[in-house]
Image (cartoon, rainbow, N blue to C red; front, side, top):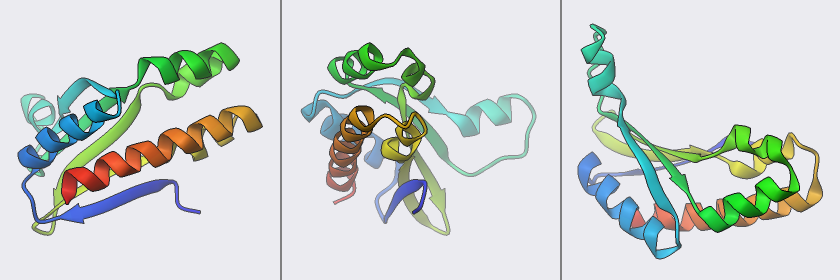
Amino acid sequence: MSFEFTVETSKGINEVVNRLKDTLMEDKFGVLWDFDLTAKLQEKGMDFNTPYRVLEVCNPQEANRVLNVNKLVGYFLPCKIVVYEENGKTKVGMPKPSLLIGLTENKDLYDIAEEIEERLIISIKKAVS
């Protein structure tokens, strides 16, 4: 089982990020932070030129739901979605919430994470279509 879900598109990074913000909002997920990793690394003098953005996303109701079961789940929050360029294509992906939550060995949490994962995958697929 892969730890991640990734899709590829010919759309540009900015277009994908903007569409992703919209598709996530449709499912009540907000983007808490849109981090331009490339700019930050360059600011620190690193020679990194790959366009690379990290979005931290959260659905407050779902966060509340899982934190009420186990406060340690906060170690996995917020969910991350990464958008970057590789070989002339834009890739969009995330670590699978079900795999991370699986580390808690709690079936109830796993079921919630699996549902959230499916919803995030739908948002990503909509954003790149």
